[in-house]
Image 1 (cartoon, rainbow, N blue to C red):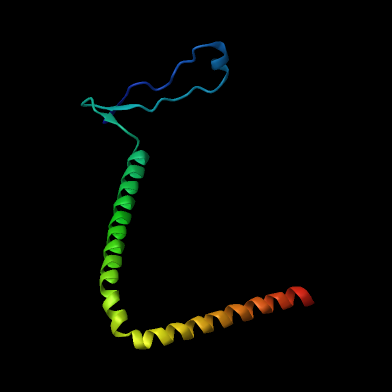
Image 2: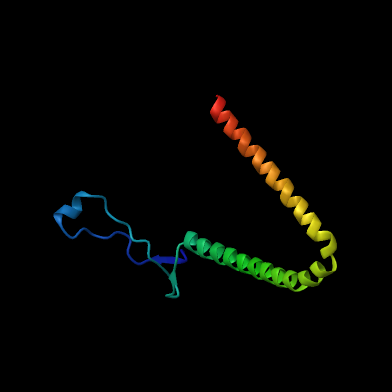
Length: 114
């Protein structure tokens, strides 16, 4: 014996215009004990969406916690290591500026001379 009873299998057309097209099938299934059942694909989609949302929420919370801890820990470290970090930051800025400028001038040269 089947676990599901078919409530309505085929919807009957209401007019002649509707009878020319294909008949629509209604997939409303009712469990033998009377409870409504949904398609397994819909249940799978709902479950996977819930799992994905909960995983992303946990990752978001962990990221927020890490950022807050880093913001609390960073100022004392910057004060302690400022004698080393400031000259290093200036050197990195100069190196980055030179790299970007050389790339830009090279691209300009390619456009102008070719």
